[in-house]
Amino acid sequence: MIVDILKAIIELGLPLALLSWLIFMRLFISGELDRQSDRKGIERGVKKIKASFKDEKKRTFAEKSKTDLVFEKWMYFGSGFYGLAALWTLVVIEVSELIGFVFNFPGLDALFGDGLIAFLFNLAMNQLSNLISAFVWFSYWDGSMLIWVLVAYAGYLAGIEAARRNLQVSKEALLERVRRKPSD
Image 1 (cartoon, rainbow, N blue to C red):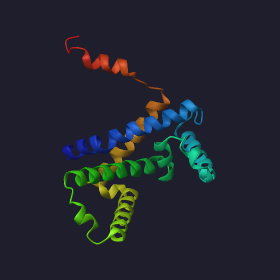
Image 2: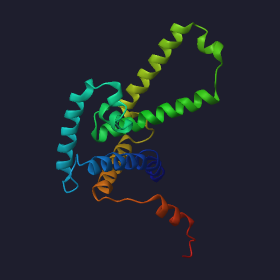
Image 3: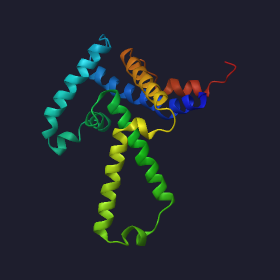
């Protein structure tokens, strides 16, 4: 069970903490959310942002390209904890499939053996399958579903709290800590 918890922390908890910290840091710095808000206030603020994001869906491509890609995808997945967990799961699925494809390349004959239309159809179905797997992210991860959900939620909340408290580490300070000898 300890191994399952550690695996969940490394594969889902820490990435969600980092992603939620990045997203909420952006929201606090931009003034869209108030750092003094409690959890309920932050939830209400995210709901308002989501509502305004839905209204802005009709923006042009040039306007959309100016927004933060991670933020936009987070909104697409529903925002909040569930949306961030689904977004991270989609990234994990896509990257693992890309690595598997590159290192186990079947060759052009296998890819296009049934024709271009069949290839495009299979590609679209694979993407749809990945998207569905991401939306039911809690069933994607191996092991106890309860452990994965609890660890993911703890990571999400830790990231929000770190952003709310304005916890920042500069690259220089981080490198200094890494370079420092253990005896210091």
